[in-house]
Length: 137
Image (cartoon, rainbow, N blue to C red; front, side, top):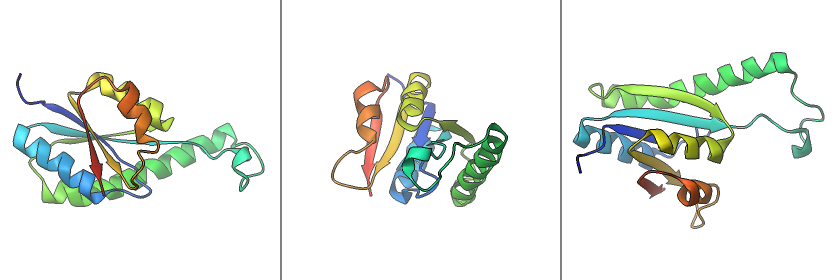
């Protein structure tokens, strides 16, 4: 089996795991692959308590623009450190489900883990459709 040329990195742009980023870019470098950085996010929910109303449709674009900017900021140092690696970015809604869908389009999915428990990563591990690397911070 040849080395993967499509590598996805599941990024939490609000709190990126540098160790997972390093793993993803080094794996891409060794394989002459590109990195598709995927930041999956959720709109705030009135049930979360801090927002007493649903997000108006007109504001969703603003929220998404902020998520795109956060991901761009996270990727900037990686693009500078690895200029030879093509980097694509996706900002998708519905965190674990989005990464599971992305697993059908890649040959390796890299995700970070911050705690001893897998947390939301468990859904990706359970339902993913490709090889994956869970990189502890």
